[in-house]
Each structure stands twice: as structure tokens, then as C-alpha cells.
Length: 157
Image (cartoon, rainbow, N blue to C red; front, side):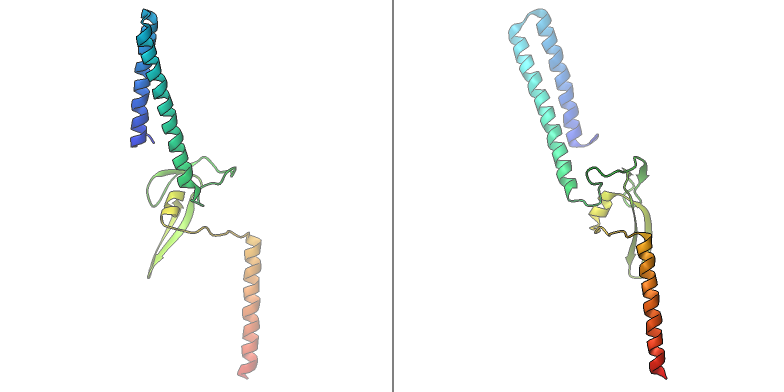
């Protein structure tokens, strides 16, 4: 949010808040009651505007991210290390994903892809199975292919 339009707006509001706070203090020191009330009203209006903009931005980010299944879910533990996304080049925190992009006869592998790129490229989450389950699957495939070879061997005679 640092260089975005919203970040600039919040920065300007922060400067206006500081100016109005100084005006309130000066009017209080000088005993100028009407100026104090006007500055105080503007000070609180700017504070309220800043808080509402921040809330709206937070809600917009939550709403945008709600549909992205690649982002960490609530109460999910993730590491705090930073990675560079291989696709967009931005710094991102965990989780990152490994993908293979294949088109025609060309293939490219990326080992660190951020959740935003996964969502932007319309990837679908894939369930990861434990290694033991995969080994059982491989054994089943092997036994099935051996059984098929035996069956073919009988009919070839």
C-alpha cells in the first residue's frame, strides 16, 4: 500500500491531521475558543476519514483474497521467510508453489510461485497425498500390469 493511491491519500490525511492538531494546540494556548472548536472538528473528521479508508482497504483486501484458495487459510501455520516469485518477480511470503507450465512440446518449471500468480493463472488446488499412499498406488499399478501381462501371455499361446 506504500506507493498506491490509497497510501498517498492516507499520507496526506496524516499530514492534515498533524496540522489540525497543531492548530488545536495553538488555539488552546491562545484561548481562541471558536478557532479551537473548528480545528478540533476538522481534526476528528480527518481521523475518522483515515480510519474509514483503512477499514475499507482492509475489507477490500480480505474480499479479494477470500476467493484465492492458494493463500494461507485462517489459523494455518506458515513460515515467515521471503521468496522471489519466479513469474512476477515480487517478494512474497510463504506459501509458494512449484509448477510446470507445458504448451505443445515446450515445458518450463518454476519452483517458487506466489499465491497471486497461481490465482491469476487460474490454477486449481491439487490434493497432496502422503508418500505411503503413493507407494501403495504404485504397487497396485505394478501388480495390475503384471496381471495383464499374464493374461496376454495365456491368450498368445
